[in-house]
Length: 583
Image (cartoon, rainbow, N blue to C red):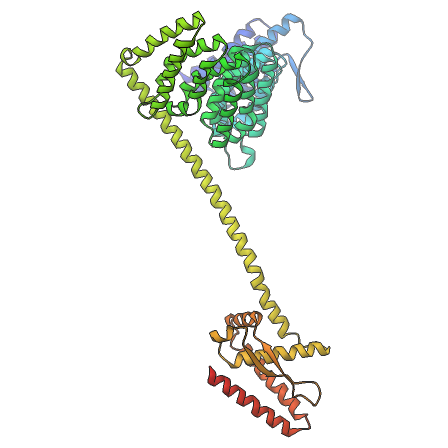
C-alpha cells in the first residue's frame, strides 16, 4: 500500500540512487535510463519533500560531467571512458525528460525544469542534443499554453551546427510548429512565439542542409516545410520560402531534392490567397521549366505536372498546366516525348467532358501527330502502347474507384473556390478601408475652408481699432453692407451678383454726401449665411444696425448743415420704400 511505499520503498530507492551517484558505478547509466518510469510509477505515493528530492537528483544527472561558464556548457576534464559514461547518462536524461515534466507538473516547468532543459538542448555532445530534439514535440505538447517558454530552445536546435540534430528535429516538425504557434498566444506580447525569428531559423536550416553533401536530410527538410501554410502567413511564405523552392526546382541537380521542392512549391501555391502571386509563379514555371532551354528542365516540368495532378483539382490543372505539357509533343529530345507519351493517360483523366472538349481534341491531335511523325523507335513503341491504354480507360477502371476520385476532385475544387472567395472578401475589405480613409480625408479638407469663414467674420467685426484712413473706409463699407443685409430678408433675387445696392458712405469731414455702388458678391452672401446659422444670428445684425445708426446720428449732429441731413434722410427712406415695394 501507499504507507509501505513511503516508509520502505522510498528509503531503499533513495539509498540506491545515492550509492550509484557517489561510487561512479556502471549501474548509473541503467538507472538514468529507467529513472523516468521509476518516478512516474511512484509519484502517487510521494510526499512533497520526497518529490523534491527525486527532482533534484534528476537535475544532478542532467549536468553530470559538464560545468557552465558564461552561459555555455563545457565538458570537464575526465578520462575518456568516464566521459562516455557521463554522456550516456545525460542522453538518457534527455530521453526521460518528457516523463519528468509530467512528474514535476507542467505548471512548474519554468521554475523547476527550464534551466535543465536548456542545458540539455545546449549540451556539448551531439547525441544529447539529438535526443532532446527527438522528444521536443512531446515537451511542447505537455506545456500547452506555456509553449513560449522553450521558444529559444527551438530556435537553437534549428540553428544547430550538427545536421544530425536537425534531422532528429525534422521528424516531428509539423506537430511541433503547429503546437508552438497555435498555443503560444497569451495576453501579453512576450507570451507569443516570435514568428520572424522562427522564419529566420527555418530559412537558415534549409540553407545549411542545401550546402551539405547529405541530400537525404535536405529532401526531408523540404518535405517537412510543406506544413508551413498552416503556421505562417501567405506573404511570409511567398517572400521567404516560395521563391527559394522555385530556385531549387529550377537549378538543383539532385533529382529527389528537385521533386520534393516541386511538391512543396505546389503546396505553397495551393494555399496562396493572392492571385497575382500564383499567376506569377505559374508563368515562371512554364517559362523556365516547360519552355526551358535544357531538356532536363522540360523533364522536370512533366514531373511537376504529375505532382500538380495530385494536389490541385482537375479544372485548376487543365487551366494552368495541361496545355504547356501537351506542347512538348514537338520537343526535339526523344526522352521528353517519351515521358510525355507515358503521361498521356493521366493527362486525359484530368479532362472533364463536355466542358473540356477542346482539350480532349487537342490531346487526340497530339497522339495523331506522334503516330504520323515519330521516328524514334522507343517513343513509337510507347505511343502504340499508350493508344491502347487511352481506348480502354473508361472501360477497365471500376466505377467505385472513379466515383471516389470524382468525390476527391469535387472536394479539392470546393476548397479552391473557398480560397478564391476568401481572397475576394479580403480584397473588398481592404478596398473599403481605403475608400473610407479617402472619404474621411476629403471631408476633412472640405471642412477646413468652411471653418475659416467665421474667423474672417469675427475679424471683420472686431477690427474696430484700425487707425488708418483706409481701414476706416473699409469698416464703414462693411457696416453699411451689414445694415443693408439685416434690414431686408434674404431672397433668391439677392443672390444675383449683378444686383447692386446704393448705400450712403459717411466721410470723415463735413461733406459726407458721397454714395457708392456696392456689389453683393459670394463672400457677402456666405458671411450672411454663416451669421444666420450660428446661435447668435438674431442678435448680431441688430447690434450692427444699432451701432451704424448711432454712428450716423452722432456724425449728423456734429455737421453744420442741417438741411442736407434732412434731405439725405428723406432720400434714404424713399430708396428703402421703393426697394421694399419691389420685393
